[in-house]
Structures are given as structure tokens and as C-alpha cells.
Image (cartoon, rainbow, N blue to C red):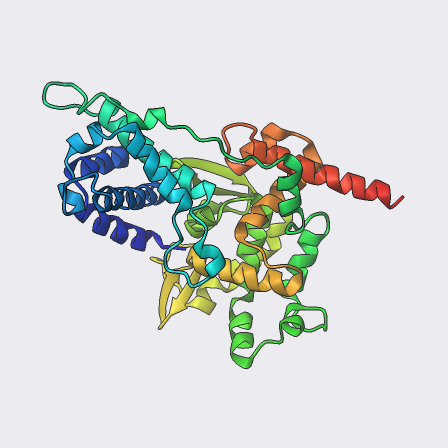
Length: 368
């Protein structure tokens, strides 16, 4: 996972090679508080598209920055469609896997590319203006392109995630497994740790348990977990303040089972990691004696190693799915579950959680 600092550095590098109108687009969307991650992904899509225009001789420019806005205005529907065919059918680059070489981009990646280009064209044709108060041009070719995406059934989506969730008492059992450094059934014994890995485990166990318990107890995203500061956590009300997608501030309830793990970490945080007043991040690490905010990649690796030793390798997002499924199981309330996740309304994803529980019900009936 790319850190926020690296994202900003990468954005700066990408902007240096972009045409003036993309730089203006970035400025406008930055004012509109688009997330830096979204803008970074969109700039990558523009680089790929502009390179394709040049390599396909559709643009007469020799560099991306020289691509004239009139070439976007006059881009034919046929050429625009050809780009998405290229994405779907091109071999993946930088891979020696012959099976992967015959595949193009995934539907998700193509959808992201279309969203990025649609956003740029909408900006140029509707959202900005020239010195006469008119759009830079009027013809929006991206509006004429639509896709029919494969949609997985609720059953298929539920089947894909249900084995990677820690439902029922498995949530507590997973945390106890991580905490267990003595018995033959605990993490230390099951993982067969080297002396160095054991030393790292003993140093970071309380911290690791705290952020894993927090995600399991609140359903917050990985990026939200990374960006929590000490002031954002309130153990009296058992809530945490996070910045949701779209830069929306939200106060998220935390299940009570996480409290002891969060308290355990806070008790050792200052002494163990030698933090000072300026170290505001809740979850920290030390590198060469310097205290730093724990990054997303480190959290992903940590969740992966513990979960793999327990039963199956999972990502932090599956901890979010776990909370959502357990909450829906308890309340049968799709709106409440969506609100806990930071969604504006009940989504198809919440229906997936319901279908996971339907499968559990069927399994229970079969065992009668």
C-alpha cells in the first residue's frame, strides 16, 4: 500500500508530464476535496490513455504534455471504443506468467479507467470555462460509451467471502490465538517463529492486537485505521473519529470486546515505542530509532501472517466484512449496518452479508 507521502510525490511527478488542462482538472478536483488516492489513480489512467493516443498515431504529439485539447474534442467514438478494447484484450505487461499474458485488464480496472476519463471529459465539457464563460468544448464522447459488466449473484459473492470471515465466537478465538504465546495451540507455536520473528512478535503483540481488534469491532477501513490519531480514540464512549471516503468526518462506535486490547496497547505505547508529544499517530512503529505512523502495508502483512497461522490468509478488508456480517446478524438492519460501514445507504454489499447468514442457516438445518 502506497503511503500518503508517496502518493503526493507520485502525483507531483505525474502532473509534471501532463497537459495544462489535466493540471487544471487536478486543481479543481483538489479544491472539491477529491481524495488524493482517487486523483492519483485517475492521473495514472490519463497517462496510460495519452500514451495509447500517441502510440496509436491518433495524437500527433510526441509527448503527453503536448497533446492538444482539440484532439480530445475531436476524438471519434470509434477511437475511444478502441482504447477500451485495447485494455480488455492487451497482454498484461511485466509478467512472465504465460497464463496472465493472454489476459487483459480486469473489468474492475477497465471500469476505473472509464470513470477516470468520464470525469475528465465532464470537467472539460461542463465544469470549467474559458475566458468567455463557455466550456472548453461541448462534445463528450465518453458519454456515448457504456459497458455491460458481469454481475456476480449474491450467492457467488457470499461464497467468495464467507470462509474468510471470523463469525460467531471465532472473532474472540482469533484474538486469543494471537495473544497466546504459551500453549501449543497459540500463534507462537503454530507459526514456528524464528528468534528474530519471536522478538518482533513480543515487541508488537499489544499493538497488533489493538488494531486488529479495532477493525473487527468497528469495521473501519485500512486507510481509516492508518490515519487515526490518539485524540480520535475515545474509550469512555467507545468511539473513534475517522475520515471516510470523500473526506467526510464520522464518529464510529466500537464493540466493547476491543476495549481491553486498546487499553493494553495504550499502557505500553509510550515506553515501548519511546513516543513523544509530537507523535500523534495512534498506531506507531520505530525505524532506526525514529517513531513513525504505522503504514497500511505493515498492517496488511501483520493481518496476513496472523490469519494464515490461524486458519486462512485474509486482508484487513475481510475484518471489515466480519464486523458487518456480525452486526447484520445481530440487528437484521441493513441501514444501521450500512451506516456503521460509512455507506450513505443500504448497499448490495450489505445484502451479501445477509446471504452469508442464509448459507449459515442452511448449514445449521442440514446438521439437525
